[in-house]
Length: 202
Image (cartoon, rainbow, N blue to C red; front, side, top):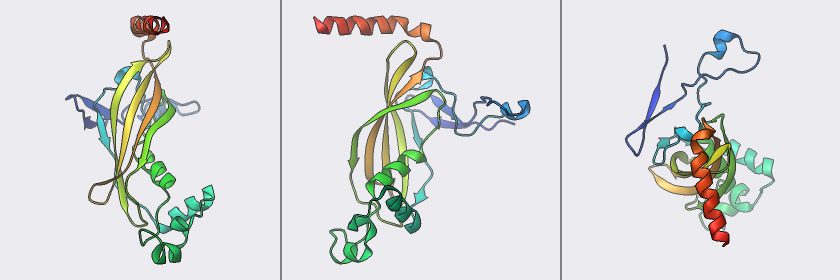
C-alpha cells in the first residue's frame, strides 16, 4: 500500500511528498522499489510557483545549542555566557546563535530532492531573537523558476522560520538549480534568453 502525502498549492495544485521510488546501487530489488521518504525525484518541471510546505515543530534544547557553538567556535557571550546574557545582555536571556536557527530552519523543510542543487542564498534576515527552549517551525514557498542552461533551470524558494505562536524570526531565499526532465522542451526558452542577453549587450 502506498501512502501519499498531498500538500496544497497556492495555485490549487497538489504536491506529492515521499512517494517516488528511486533505486540505489547495492539494494535488493524489492527494497529499491519502495519509495524513499523525503528524498524526492522531482525535476524542474515539477516545481510550481506558489507551492508551500510547512514543517513539523522543533524545540531547541540547551545541549544542542552549546554543541553547535562549540562546533563552529562561536562563544560570543550572548550565546554561551548565561551570567552575561542575564545580567548585562540586551535581551536578558541567552540567545540561540543565528547560524544555528538558519541551519535548523532550512533542515526542517529539506526535501532532499535528488535532482536539485544549492546555488546560493539571498536576503537572509534575523528578525527576532530565538532563545533556548523556543519551538520553531518553517514554511517553505516556491517563488519562481526560470531556464538556466541546457541541462537545468534555476529555482528561487523562500524559508520563513517562526517560533512559538507564529512570530517570524528568520527569512531567507534559496537559489537552486534543478535538472530538466526533458531538456528538449526548454530549447525555445533558452534561445529567447540568449537573444535577450545579446540585445542587452547592444
